[in-house]
Amino acid sequence: MEPSACRVFRAVQANALVAAVACVLFLLCVVTPLYIHAVLGRSFRGDRFDVAGRPTSAASPPKRLPGVHGRRMDMDGDVDLDASYATIRARYDAEFPPGDTSRAAEFSRSLRENEYRPIEENMPYDVNDCPPRPPEGYPVAWPVLDVIGNWNPDDTTPHLRIHQGLCRFDAATQFDRASAYREAELPFVLRDDPAVQATVERWNRHRPGRSEEYLTEVLGQNKTYRTDYSGSNNLMFYRTSKWKETPEGWTEPTRRWKMSYPDWLEKASNPNFEELGPTMPHWYFQLNYKSPDRKGYLYDELPFFRPTTETSFYLVDIDAIQGINCMFGMRGNTAAMHYDTSRNFIAQLGPGERRYILAHPDQCRNLALYPLDHPSGRHSAVNWTDPDLEAYPHFQDASANEVVLQAGDILYLPTNWFHHIVSLSTNYQCSTRSGKTEQYDGYIKECGL
Image (cartoon, rainbow, N blue to C red; front, side, top):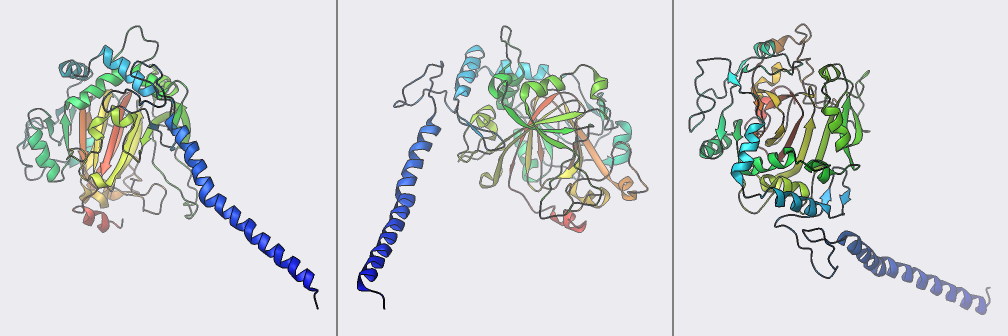
């Protein structure tokens, strides 16, 4: 039988253990959150500056331009807290006041070096003066072999007569017409929105006497961003998962790097066209911006894509927005024909051009798409520069049209519309998605996707 003294001692030990556990739980539940709050609060406050770049006290809020925020987030979720953006933007706006819309418009239009015309003279509608409501059969489409036979996707030399079926609306005089086509969930191009032109001017205007251009100042000399690399001009999308097996013999079509904007721009600006040929290395520079509070430098740069409580022409369903995705392309960069499962507004922000070959969702069966369980699911397996009609016989039955986006253009792509993209020269493009419609889902389901 255990002596009473031992039993008392063991009881004291047990009580002490319980007390120790209670203390640990108290620290975890009460003290630790307070500590974390203090640390994060100090970290996320960061240095404060006024619009002239002068430091302010932590007790007083920074004086910023209206709508301009210092908080930045790149696609990896890294938050840049140096608060430099407001100062950079203020310097630019002092040099080029933002209220001068005529100056921005003139500059934006000056970047358009080519005038593209429909290849057919007798179109059922004028693509630059379309009717108020979508005409029957809109948009006109042609056999895909005619489209790529007239202008091979590997050829980045502008062809001025193209198979254009999309309407292009002037934002100032034809906005109501563009709204009607959007309501009908049909693709179109909206041109010369003053808010878009202002961004085009900021991102492309040369500023004499400046050692760095505006985008270099904003994005930084050394800060790196996701950049997709390919040994050719084909930058095929792919997504792998440890839960899915990849097809036998499949290899990643691109590699994902981290690269600074100046490094990418140096490669993209190479004047030697032969070094940017289809079989030479190409890079896609990306900014993928998803801010939980819907604030930050990219929303300030692209205010037309900023979600607000008000109705937005470019954000059809504000509750289903997916942030902003920017793809900076160099000559020849090609994204294979594919569809997206949401609405997409795509802004062309200069300086160069980007060609879109489009196909209605009813062409799904003819485009030889990889199945959804393939790393490049939803994308066409056909080599559009030299299609193998024995391997993909239905491709010759496909129909398509095309449009070339220039500085100041915004393309609307409804849910499930197919698009094949070719960068004709160095260009900046940003897009946003907001919700989806189901009216084209049947075509996608019919081809097993």
